[in-house]
Amino acid sequence: MKKVGVALLGLGTVGGGTYRILVNNHDAIKKNDGVDIEIRHILEKDISKAEKLGADVSIVGTDINAVINDPDTKIVAEFFGGIEPAKTFLIKCLLAGKSIVTANKELFSKHWPELEAAAKNGKAGLYFEASCVGGVPIIRTLTQSMQGNNINSLYGIVNGTTNYILSKMSDEGLEYADVLKEAQRLGYAEANPSADVDGFDSMYKLSILSSLAFRTKVPINQIYREGISNITKDDIKFGKELGYTLKLLAISKKVDGKIEARVHPTFIKNDHPLASVKGSFNGVFINGDNVGDIMLYGKGAGDLPTGSAIVSDIVFAANQSKPQYTSFKNTNDVSDKGFSKNFICKYFLRLTVVDQAGVLSKISSILAKNKVSVNLMQQKNKEDKALLIFLVHKTHEKDLQKAISEIEKLSCVDSVDSIIRVEE
Ligand code: NDP
Ligand code: HSE
Picture 1 (cartoon, helix red, strand yellow):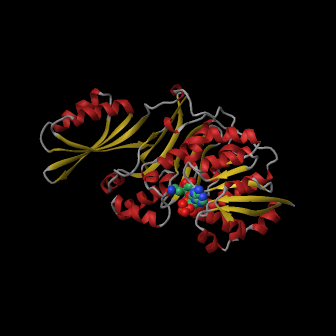
Picture 2: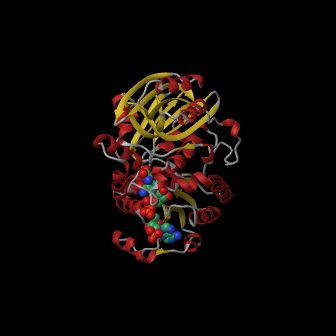
Picture 3: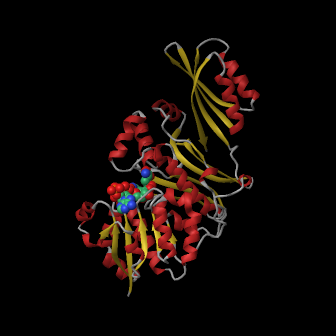
């Protein structure tokens, strides 16, 4: 029987879930996977977290050298979060030949090249299933189940907090700020909610997933990012009336040989499979040239779902005889040439304007001049003003933005309230 010593770095949400699964499933893993996992070290500042879990407090400390100098600890699982000290600790462990399992998408998306270089140097493994979409086995699907495909596109709801907020705003007609607090209370949100609501968390995950999907490094600086904090319940309501559901989507696709990667609020048709991904659930919809469409769905956050992915990586790492690394050049220093920022999509626009003759014709002539073709227009009254809603046909981002900057200058336009991309 293979005995494998493990260190857990952090005993917060994910660390606690991992600990519980390792203890509760210890015998089943031993029987089914032939691995006897022993938790030999826990790094955690707050010892009461270990006490609450019933852990052996004699193995709890804060010194990474205790882990590095223990020859029987072969796998180090990290859930500190943030960049430092996680980065320094993990690099030290990798150089010492210890395999790493991490849930830390921020660290991984920003410093994957350095971590991989250290792993190669120490002949150690690097596993990150829990970094994207929590308990959903998306990383292994991309790396081990899609080899027979060129992936054309990946559309993901990869952040539970924002999906919870948007679902609740949509189902209960609530405003954004009221729902955010509840998401934090439920433990979905990152410590700094900006990571979730401003789209950083989705961007980190998209960088990792797209790199694997397209076998090309997609660094975070090549990803367009926009969050949900400006979304109003009215946008959601008006979209609904037109047959759309609003989601924060992480999108990457190959268009004319270039990669387009973006995170932004997106209207999708109500009957799109991702529209039914509600609450804190995540979903990833992938199109491969041979398999066609596939979708993975499940819990992208939380102690046990994320712990499930961590434990699967620990067992995987324990059973790997030779670690594998990326097949692509893993560098953040990529040329802009492989990426497109001038993406093409439909748009939903909401404007507040003066309600008088000629306003519509001024706006539509600017749209026409910039090659933006109107698919649908609705007017709603708002006190003494008019609220205009446009759905425009597929257009280049640059043309749309130019038209908007001209429209904003019209004296009859009070404000351009919303510009929301539509994917069909
Ligand atoms: P938590 O804040 O709940 O847990 C982190 C724990 O690590 C805390 O107990 C913290 O202690 C401890 N810690 C941090 N630095 C040190 C240190 N230097 N020495 C000792 N202990 C330390 O975070 P989560 O569990 O929520 O998240 C951890 C990671 O997992 C993050 O990278 C996150 O992005 C990722 N993740 C989280 C998911 C979730 O559902 N929460 C899902 C998927 C990924 P203290 O609080 O005292 O600082
Ligand atoms: N804050 C993240 C989310 C945790 O809401 O999805 C999982 O990465």
